[in-house]
Length: 391
Image (cartoon, rainbow, N blue to C red):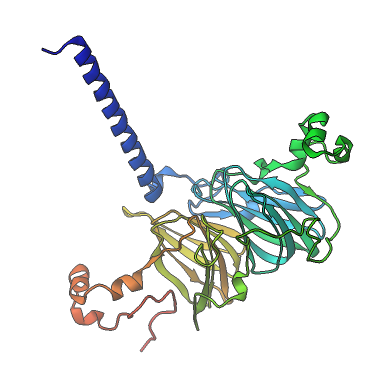
């Protein structure tokens, strides 16, 4: 016979099993949601027609004497769950003040001008580095940093590995100081609290300043530069990952840039008429910023759902993890696209490579034609192509 105590034990065990099963189902559901996002889950941003396209120019600018910024998060671009981004300019000498991001790492691509960054990590090591057009930086989540424009100013794109992150909700040093008692400031810094009295009483965000002195700096004045992992990578100064008469692809992942553990950056350049071939990313969402030229993209999201949109300079695109897509240059000049993936490991699977490595008999059965029809298929992935020559 079962006693009341035995029954209570069985009931508790059953409840634990149900709880564990529910938790496992919940985790599986979360993983599935990340991999396959039903197209009906998202609606276009207010006033927009496309799920996968957003016009950065529709974002409201935060403008200050030293520069401006505009962002694209899930608030403006609902499908962009994995990545948020900011378009920012700084006037010469102006500083994006000392700050940190609690919930996202920061990756950046320099579009024009020159900037200097400072960064400190939890071990107390630091780095000061300068960036020009085509350079990339990466700041891990929670690391304190600043950005200052050099002579001529700076224009850059910031990307964050969390679509819900807002650049306008960062932890800024002036905001923190303004909300701390003076005696605590003095105790925390061994400095008179009056040294902070001229700072803006609230978040400064961007402050005007003087163009900083040339590097290197004195070791006891911010020039220690002892960070074991460098936060600077000269992406466009190095040979491309792929290059042909049809275009080129530059990639910087954690393999090339070890500190960039959560983000991979790509620059895709397509000649007129060329296409970044049909492919998908098994491990990452893709965020795009169209730097120059005119493009067209189709995103295939399974179950008969596909959407085609055209993109101009400053437009933003997004492709959820695992969704098939391509980008085609439909203009008369080179199409240049910045691609950001929310994984430090780069992966893609392309249509041409899949066909190349599938037996002809399987392809013939799949597409209801003859094995001989597949004899001319490419031997390797095309990456960027203009198609077969016409007879």
